[in-house]
Length: 440
RNA sequence: GUCCCCUUCGUCUAGCCUGGUCCAGGACACUGGCCUUUCACGCCAGCGACACGGGUUCGAAUCCCGUAGGGGACGCCA
Image (cartoon, rainbow, N blue to C red; front, top):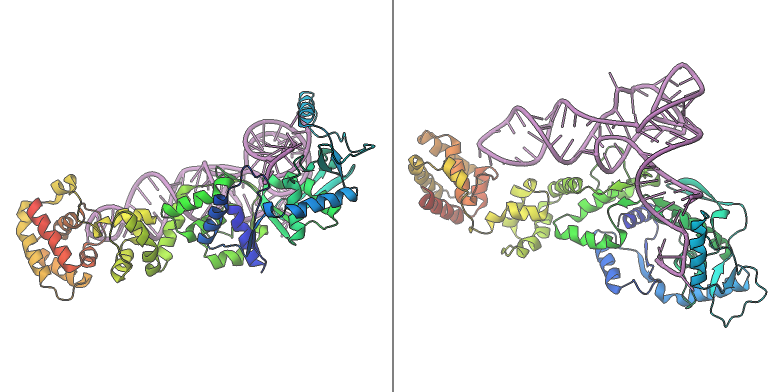
């Protein structure tokens, strides 16, 4: 997904087209669900492709015709070696300390019968070297000695990856290929294919791999983070900073990413995914997002927990009060659960420490005076607390902590005045009464 | 085995191209303090790195060579 993101950012920042192509020439492994999952993840991240998905399995005719063409033009040849023979040769080469490459057995045959089982191999150049000017890695040169005539069409007639990507890139007028650096070596095989096709190779950018995050699980983990309450903005933001930077800036909006992104600032060393940092970035976005928007995204998490939550002004108030106390939407649900249920236990230690029968009278007075408030807000609530505290000669904590215990079950919460005022008046008073009865 | 790539605080990184302003800057995490009606948030401070060895140079994180370590590729996988 990080690779997809860099592709997206590059396309956007250069007014290009972002194309999704599914490389599914291996019919064993590809499944429709994967494709759907990838698209879903991309849409959620706000990087839906401009074109595609292009499925390679639907383009076999093109590949087949192209192989035939290369055969006609002498850029490719039929090979009759069996898998067993090749495997034996590989093993022997490895044993003798040589590089396991195809020796070119069938490159110069007198006859090439079409009706015998065969694969088709591309002819690699015989001497010299190949240099790729990579946007991230710089100039990388490999001697053609290292390359062999690889198979472009299998015995069963299906084409292979290193061949079809080239055919597709050429056919689709792809100008920039941005992928993981596990493909850097493949590039040297692919460049001669472009030449055989009579095409100029595109520009390449090979990104360092991420440690510990498999690309095949990429889209699944995106959904996983979403379910864990990570915001789309935060995941994009965090992912973009893995291998790329813009000075010391840590928080980037979508537009900023598009504006600043460039391969000049992409590093060449691999990086690791750090959950802690992701959570921090997410907490920053929790604070930054419009409260109404955050409330809107929060609703499904509340409903998941069985709370009856509606996306209304009251929920927005709760968001404003609680959002800087949580790193994720799931945590926010935990932190704010007492707004949605009064089914909680009172914390024993807190009760021992703060509930003092001597203060029962003050609490009664407090409840009485709160009931008389007409304009229910944190200021009017605050006035009552201060007045009751003064009248009974009690420190604010002696009123605040029992209030917190009554309303939330424990002593950690936002400012009591705001806490009380954010509950509907009757609910706040009901809980205070219940606490007064059960605790004192 | 051969080839390719990589190596700055535990982690993400700035700096490297265009040597001196770097006894290396920022962020996460961690530790301490401040703020305070609690808990968070916030603020301040601390901890903490140029893989190693040579060379070039008045001077190297920055340039060159080597070593070590890590990753990748070498498939009728992608």
